Structure formats: structure tokens, C-alpha cells
Image (cartoon, rainbow, N blue to C red; front, side, top):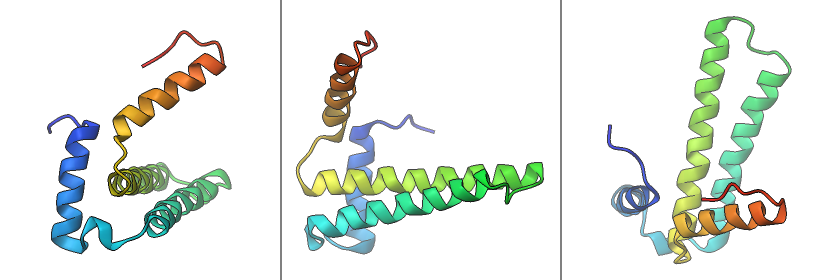
Length: 111
């Protein structure tokens, strides 16, 4: 499997969106952020169920982790499409925000 970069995600994400769903600019900003929030909500729901112990067996727990991973991936995918729609380089934005928080917390760990 080829390693994922923000650049690779953007190329394939926009191409798939426009090939299989709709043009990137067919949705306004609120539609992209609402889709992203919906997926975040689904991740929260899986985490809630994990936290209250709905998954008892090791197999059920592995399943739940897999479902959480899928929902988190959906959040990232929609965040990238939202960023693409707004002309934001998500890789640059993440580095800048990460380093901003590191500075605020006096951490030497930076990207």
C-alpha cells in the first residue's frame, strides 16, 4: 500500500468526489462541514458504546475499534474535501496549527 500524504489524499479524494458523487463546488461550505460533523457524531456514538461496555467479547471489541477507525477516516476525508472546496492546503494548515498549540503549551515538539 502506498503511504498516504495530504497531497495524495487530496488528488484522489477530489477525483472520486467529482467522478462518483458531484462536483466539489456543488456543495456549499455548510454542507461540507455538516457532513464532517455527521461523521464525527458517528465516531462519538461508537466511542459511547465502547465506553459503556456494549462490546463484551474480544471479537466485539475488535469490531468496535474497526468501526471507530472507519468513522474517524470519514471525518478526515470530509475535512479534506471541505478544505479543498475552500482552497485550503490541509497539510500546511495542520502543521501551522500543531506548531501554534506547541508554542502555546511551551512544547518543543513541532512538525
